[in-house]
Image 1 (cartoon, rainbow, N blue to C red):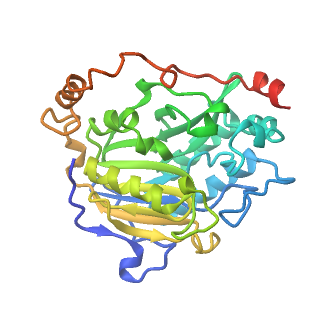
Image 2: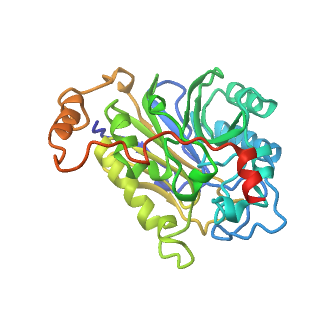
Length: 351
């Protein structure tokens, strides 16, 4: 869906400090987004520091930091607060595979967020107390497995969506379990229709097509961390150049503005995929923990939930299926079947 964001209001445009937005309206005709770019507790800095020696993940301190950020955002006029990928308790940058993470897996499992736990209830209470939507991205502990999760929680404290990354990327899939297709949902709000995906899900049609077919008017994306362009110490898959390219393409395809939440170089894109607000990774997290952007949402709540004539539609899906190369065998392959990782079994193999 193509949106014309007029007027779009951002702090930098009028000479307002990075950390302070214009005061948002209290009605449904204006949405102010607060994008978290500050790191969670005990997360090595600077952004590309991957030394985890003697570092422990700390969910309690991270939740405390989150509640303070939510309050600050609400006080500044935000209606929605968005967190980076695995911000609770922190993305294990540089060690996100069982071999490198073996000394941290038990600590990470213990500090993964359990739905219904005291820490979860604290986040729910922060949303209710501040009357804001929040979109936490977290390691979700359920039984003996963990998942890369996103949630959307309403100002009334209702969980509107709880989803898991469909297929964790690379070595992540050896630690976190897969999600399911039925979790790819767009949520109707008084401000419009919101969809959520994580990181490299934005590269894969298995994730993007079903979300875009539901006609988002805002896309909420979580990346774990992003350095500034030109970073020589980043792997290609970590670079701003690669990841922002996927964000631009997604926004243009969806025709929806795009929230790029990440520790470091965070930004807000318009529905053409162009930058509206960017704060570089080099900017102090103490000075600018949040990036703000506001836009007019008048009428977006009435957006139809699908477009039978759109590029992301049932007809297009059928066309792709009918045109799939006949010489390619009709086999499921090894990638698609859902993979579950049981942490006690993983620990018995690697520790």
